Length: 199
Image (cartoon, rainbow, N blue to C red; front, side, top):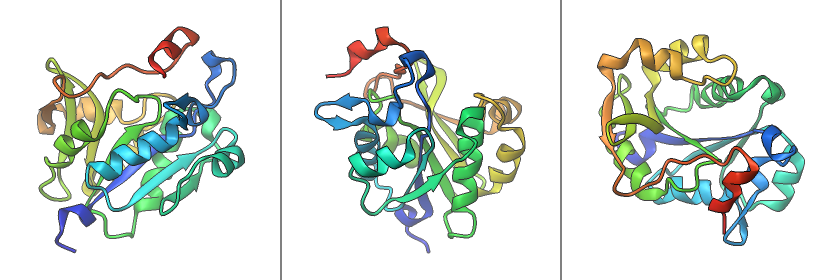
């Protein structure tokens, strides 16, 4: 495959149980009449990701039943309670061998980051050695583009809730920062107070 739309797969981490939200899975939080997981998938598709893998965990069966995820590869992470690192590993494992050259990693609890920001970061893809990240006023954030050459290294260091943080810190000089503050708001839906962002 030579088309970058096929080379860059969307990887949505949507397994969290919403511990600080009273145990409400983030994937099922309502936003504009639809579950957050649907908004996040739509944003990855709007960014040009023809393939989208979605990592599920907390109440995975309810997410499958309530959310429209047609055409997505659904990856169940039985270790989701161990944190985002386990979901990232599960997602990268699911992409290994698919021919994807990179994973555009998005988080389900950041509805302020839409297709425009995702498309900008996806546009940084060159080859399997690419590392790129959105930046907000120069500060690195999500989404992150992980070239396939980095997946094994990321998986080794992805523990707890750190995700790719440790790997990216160690490879900071290789990361292309893509400014997105003009098209996205990188807030998280972590606590009850954050629910004000949802409509």
